[in-house]
Image (cartoon, rainbow, N blue to C red; front, side, top):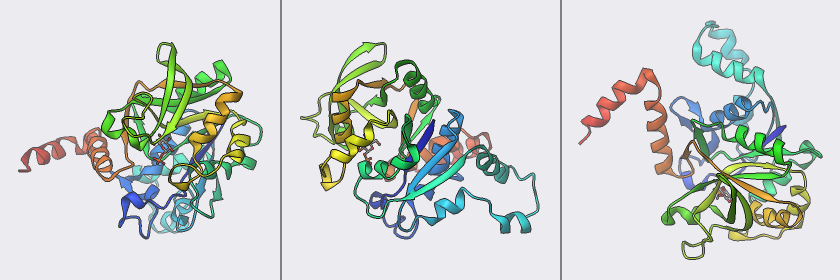
Length: 281
Ligand code: G1P
């Protein structure tokens, strides 16, 4: 299975930090956020990865490539930090497509049509990081069983529901839902449920003909959710309620919390950071 990771957006929610660098390269602790998403793909044995980039995103390609100068001048092959990225590079092949205009998530995925071909594939959005559960692996397993499209969902509170695509669904098995309808970024009053789509999908290739048929929707962008609504007329779109913890790094506050939480999970930083946080007045 291949994965498509859209990274062509302008990162407006992170200005000014993203004025001259890709949001996907902003570090959480000591790795760019995109590194965590790629790690998840590899954990699920998804090793052919297309990243959809755009203007100003060249450092993404440099990151997932050898740095000959660094290797030449910095001759410590045992440096654990470099070992980690090296092993990531050896575990997957990276491909790139450029989204020449930021016309929305639906448009970004459509840029991967030729790369994906006639196979089911994973879509992984960079604003969500999953801990304790390899979310895309679970979706991949479910897709292998049922041969239909799966999306990950999570219960979110009404004050945050308008940041997500939200499903109307009936539970058909423990934590598995048949999607009846979906709405992109509804107001809390219009939300059909509290189940929000959280950035991990496994699609059948039928999604592409749906992406080709949609018109600009919410925010005048081509929305993946609108194409999924069309897909739902052709096959079952099923949802899986994630069991592990998710970090939403799509906002500045989410980013800060993720940085703290991921640092606290690292033994080398834990005690020092806890002590520091407790000392702040
Ligand atoms: C996108 C999708 C939305 C989904 C969200 C998950 O929105 O359009 O349906 O719920 O990702 O992170 P975005 O965050 O790109 O605005």
